[in-house]
Length: 570
Image (cartoon, rainbow, N blue to C red; front, top):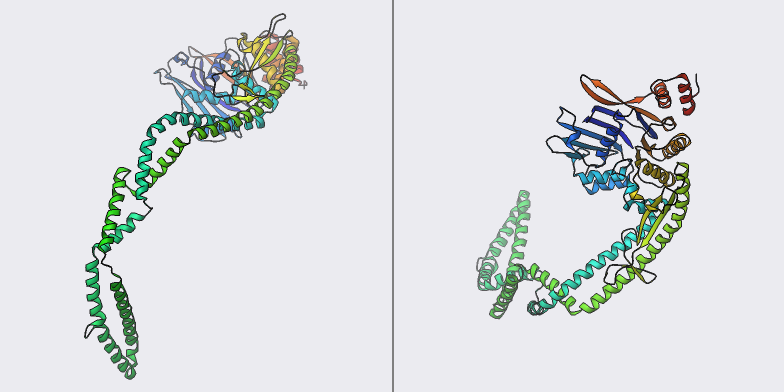
């Protein structure tokens, strides 16, 4: 829902800040008062092009800002997240048109490109009239409208999932085939490298272990002599530390029997004696294990040399050598088994072509079935809206794939092109005059006629349509009397599902408003300004009466307005 609209220094508008509501919002005003300017300004929020000519005289820039309630709008929330934008219940869209040419766009106060504003507008609003922002006049939206009405969301998700997998497989197969020649050229090199690495057969962590062993082997004589010397001092030599500490322990024991204050120190000496014995035992075992083995020393040196050579050639570390071996091993196996790999992938692709085809066939059948219902209902709605000789068709085509196409799906063994919505192309055709064949809807020229066609479509698709806001301009072009009343009733009914903002000259439509706004033109000093004012109870009656009788409001016009609005005179 569009909660509020701010327009500042735009053409004849100096400053408008208006709050819209749910349901049917009607805008009326005399010709030339600025209604079209208001709609043009709204178009800026939807990504339409801007010109510096709209900047009000003696101003530096024009500002148009809309605050939209987007709570629960999954598509908008997803779009904001995809673009790393702040997500709130309210979405602030702002355009600034500067005389300096630095036109800027903002979403939630964050600068964004114009195309993102346009993409956001496409998910929020349909603006109908003499404007480019009309979903009905973009052929790609026709299939979306049809699918929404048919309730095909679950089936489309299944197709989308399968087609994404198919696309991914096609990409992988293409890359595999492109890689084939390159790998065949490198196969001999990979074979040599694999042989070279496997001849050494390095193990993870081996280098560190060998370095430790080399250090010991390199210093084995020093380790042996020093260990023997330590053991002699501790235990073997005459008057060794072990013997002297034993004598000291015995003397402390004698003293402790006389004076108990020596007991603590006796315990500490006994602990030291035990530790010394353990050290001596370790040294004895160690010196017996020291192996003066020149052959093993040379073997370790050669092994480390071989590992270092591999490191220099394949990345600088043992880990990189092992990673390179794994990579080229995979590539070599692939080069050896290209035919079987490609065959397996092609079989998988063919299975997904059939799966996609089954989903697409079901979707297509649903579309064709629903299109008959839509045709009948829209033709009836168009007649009730004053387009009595109308014909409406939903054209559904399948494009068969060319013989040279590699990316296709299979429907009953036939090859078809496809997109994210299946293998159908959908376009609405319409004829509004007797004897004329239906033509593409996007070529219908009349703004009022297009608006009524859209009104008919929306009245049929109302509950399934995902666009929350509909803006109608010139919907009453060429309409009067009974048809005007019917247009108003359809708008009122549609307002149960959408927020409607409609500009009208007809009392039959204006009298049904939930909120009524009047565009007024006046002077401020020597300058003409347009303003927008919300009308309250009696003002609404007077405005509807003015539409019925002209500038001079009669009592009969007031009574007629009340009757039209369903208000009893007090």
